[in-house]
Length: 290
Image (cartoon, rainbow, N blue to C red; front, side, top):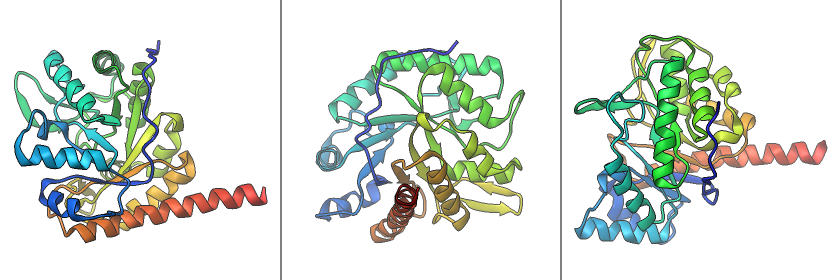
């Protein structure tokens, strides 16, 4: 039976956003009117930080709606949930008025940190395990957790397909979904499924926001999710299709490696806006012409 909670998602985030990196913080602060609607950070990189970076973060959180995308919750892991960390996290989210908090549908630790996002077996037992842990996190945080579909390169012990597993976790935990469009594309190539069929199977009312990013072609049939390159055309096309299927959602550009100039990042954010505007116009045309 699905869990039910009364925690809400802050729906005030709209438009196109950018993942904040320290390498361009100063340049971003110098922008009087940066063409981004919101920012996203990994809270683990900022918890209890002091000094000039803490002051810079405070200036940015006062200027832009801020989201958090976690790295170390290990929501699918075998080790006990680190509730001390979750309570520290709640303080951080409240202090900086973080609008949304998301994490990866994966695990990254057992007795110690594994320094990678490991695949959770797509099984009914894993669904129950993960859903129970998500529910506990939501109870501590007193807010909805948003989980992200992840890229994966092996599927140990698989009993169901990826999208069935994702939907089952979201439903049983009564949480929301961060739909990473690049991860859908990467997995569709690596595991040979149809990306659009995956999008079709998503429950639209569960999707809080979207990610897009770049990747690396290791081989013709193997793509590695790196966040280290520009977004490619097939991912943009899948983003446009996603808007058609589930409606407009806030969408964020991730870039973690080989970070270009801030203007180059703004140019990619502008592409997100283009597809959002295109989708809005299509809806308007349908309403106008019936």
